[in-house]
Image (cartoon, rainbow, N blue to C red; front, side, top):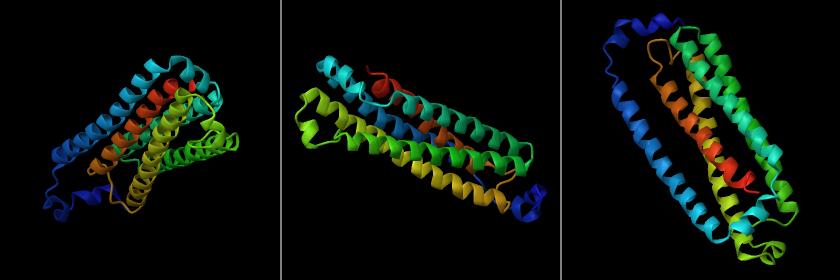
Length: 209
């Protein structure tokens, strides 16, 4: 479908509150910042009580996977930005390709996270495991926060992939165009927030040692 279809009289008669939509997205993102901000404060409070235990527990995590996932998400954010820029220029095929790359990289991130969690679980490092219960309170709290915060982040990645998949379908069908890309832009804001949150999680856990 040609992007100029968005200029037909039918579309001209529609009222689309782009500013209101973007404001709503920013308010939603603010609630997400408050949620993770509270968890970051909780982490900081416990780390101030158990600095040595958190330092030692962080050595059990796979720093390589953590850094690799950071590169993956940063690259996905770049692809997301390129997708939005492409549709603004009216190059729909490029927008589709870049958005597809973003989705694939998000899936790769989740696969890496699954492999990492599997490795930690096999070592008995998961909440209420017999091995972890023998460790200090600080170590147990560290892994409790690790699974809670990275797990919550993983759920946000899954939600983001679902949203981006819908955006991709709309791009293919021509429902997102050079003159009507607000939904794609809002989805990009959410994806960038997910990436930023991970950038904070990386030093808290993987570089804690």
